[in-house]
Image (cartoon, rainbow, N blue to C red; front, side, top):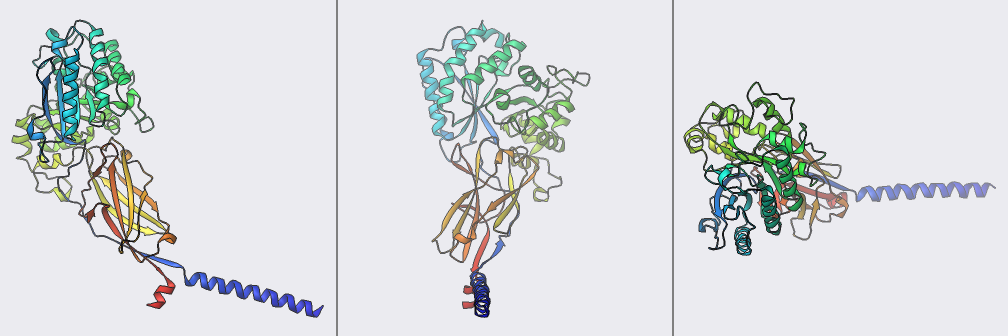
Length: 474
C-alpha cells in the first residue's frame, strides 16, 4: 500500500513537472508584437475621386441624323472634369416614339461617354430655352413611352450612369412650367423611372417639396432604409437655384410657409434641416447662382455642409465662383486651409474627404480612426481592406474590413477594428496598408493624408512580430 502511495505521488509530481516544462516551452516561443504607426497629417491636396466635385454640362439634341460625339478635351487624362451632366433633348420626338435611328444614336452617345470613364449625370429634357410648354409632349403617355424606350440604354451603361435628374419635364428639365407637375403626374413618372432603371442608379427631383409629394411623407430617409433599392432610397435632389436667395430662387417657401404640410415648400431653415438628414444617404447637387449674401463664403460653406452637397456646375454662376469665392480667403476653424481661397476650400470639400486620424495595435487587433471632412459621404459601394505584407516579400495577405464606407458620415469619425492572426505571421516585419476601392469602377478612393502610398494603398504603420526564442538568439 505504501508502495502504491509512493507511485501515485511520483506520478503526480511527474505530471506537474511535465506541465511546467510544457508551459515554459509555450512561453518560450510565445510571440510578441510591436506596432509603429507612420506619422501623418491632413493635406489640402486636391484629390481625384469619383462622383464628387465640379461637373461639366454638355447638351445633345437627339435626332435621326448626325452621329453624336464626345468633345476631344474629355478624351485625355487631364480633361476638364470627370463628372459630366449630359442633357439630352428629346424635342424632335415630342409627339411620337423615338425612332430606331434616334435610339441608335443614344446608344452611340452613351457608349462614347462610357469609354471616357467619366461618371455621368443624365437629364432628359424637351426644352433648353425656357419654353417647355411649347415643346413638351401633349400627353403623359408619350413621356411614359420615352422613358420605356431610353431605360434599356441607361441600364446598359449603368456603371457609368451615376444618377438621373428630373422626370423629363419642365423648362430646362427643371420640373417647372409643365402640364405634368400634379402630385399624380410627378409620382407616376418618378415611379416609372424607378421601376425601369437599375436600382444602383440614383434619381433626383428639383425641390424637397416635390420629393415629399412623390413619397407622401415629411420624414426624410434614414440609415435603416438607405441603399435598399426602393424609390425612397434612390431619390435625391438637384438644386439649380442654390444659394441664389433666401428661398434658393423658389426652391423653398418663404417665412410664412407651412412646415407641417409635407407637400408644401417649407421655410429655408426647415428645408436645410430636412436636407441635413436626407442627404446623408442620397446625393445633392446643382448650380450656384446670383451674387447675394447667401453665397458669401462663410454662409455658403455652412449651407453646403448642411445640405451635404457633393457636386456643382463648374460654369454657374461665374459671378459667384470667380468674382466672390476665388477672391475670398478661408478663415474658418480648419488650420490646414487657413489662407487658401474660398473656391479651393469648397472644391476640395464637395462630397467625401477621408483623413486618417490615428492607428494602433493591441490584442491582435488593429484600430484605424478616420474622419470624413467633406460636405457629404460617398453613396456608391466602397470596399475597405487592409493588406499585411512582409518586408521580405514572402507574405502578402489582404483582409476585408467589416465596415460600409457609405455610412461614414460627413463631419464624423469612424473607428475600424481589424483582427490580425499573428500566429500566421512567420517573418519579423510587416507593412500594414489601408485601401478603399470603389467596387463599381474598381477604382481606389484617395485619402487626404500624407501617408506612404503604393498599390496596396496607404501604409499605416509597421508591425514587428517576434518570439522569445528569436529575441534570446539575438
